[in-house]
Image: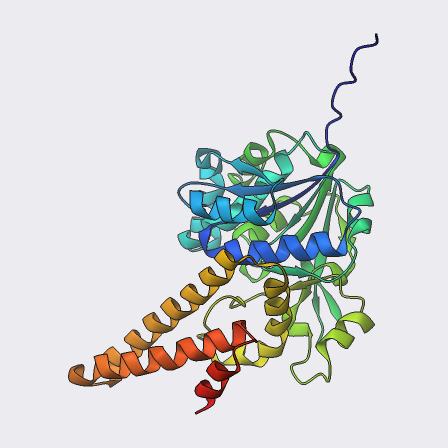
Length: 338
């Protein structure tokens, strides 16, 4: 009897960094990716770190409920001290953005032939086979000035494809050592991982992908007749929700221009989310709204009136939220309009 064949290592990997505040975004990212890429048979790797990018046990369970085959990679932040020092002293990146740097871990996933790294605030709207078939060691989408119709001298890191010699176990240390020799950068090229990688890859070989693989929500006109038609006509494969996220209360007035864009995200979420995830979204929206109102009330409302107003607004907000999530509750929708 011949020996059983050894298990063949997966060749392809989709990877993303997920912390507790981004778990709902990750559900949409992964579900939309799998829905649009049913051919994919590789691994999906979730990257986190206990201090700067914590992913709680309950949120890991939530992700596994939706995607049982996930692999979790918990990394050691000490390897990133050099990167943090450069970013916070030279680029002046706020320490609160440290989690973004952990996407560099994708360069160290040497047990795969090709790794596609995506930000967890993305919605996949088309087939990504071309990314997994790209042969270049490092591929990204170049930044572009659409007002002047000019390519810019840096790239975005929301979508990265790494393979071949681009995958190296000691890549984070290699980047850290290089950054130690750099004392000045162009801060207009971004912060966090984007600034670091633009510095490291300046003058090094890189392959530029079509913009459709990292298409900012800001490039979709708010007044377009149909966002779905716009995405189809422009062959957008990945829609990137830069700025305030679809699962969060909007703070900046300009973000209200993208409410219709976020309906795409919400529809995807509701198409796949289990009750535990829907409940999480509702609770988080209520908590965020409550925190925002408290901040405003402390400035503008007499103390005696705060609690009465808080309860009234909370009830109205809850009705509106549940009405938008559970479409089979017309009574709640009617109440919200009253």
